[in-house]
Length: 202
Image (tube, rainbow, N blue to C red; front, side, top):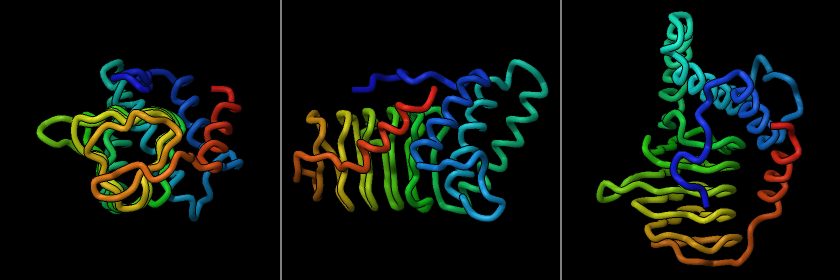
């Protein structure tokens, strides 16, 4: 289970590169750079990581601050375009955004590595308490995780499910409103994605 602030803030070029490589592996992309036309999700994730990096070092040098404002402005424009609110420094490496549309994540949440999320998902507070999400968690279309709960590693949240209680069982799938366990399985695709990230040198 991920603990608060377990994943490191991106404060070096090496760590930035580690995050970019892990995200690319999770997305199952083999090219060196995005296409000029297309690859909008990959481009968005690159912009997220670079904005995180320059945000974390912006007080070190005036040039870093200028670069932060540039990346933050372009990241904000993309976020507004796709109606997403993904805060900085809350998601570990190996991120996959399946559908870049209508995603809301509270800026105080803690999310582990190899997290994947789809359109219409919300990770938010309830009664001023926020979730902690483990490693290798997948949120499918329209699912929600709300309140001061913890989600174990290797958990899938089914489409439209609303999770309001902690999930302590790994390698399980949950669905419904409120969410209950519907399977003791974890998808092969998610395991393959986790293994791809492990194989890269990060």
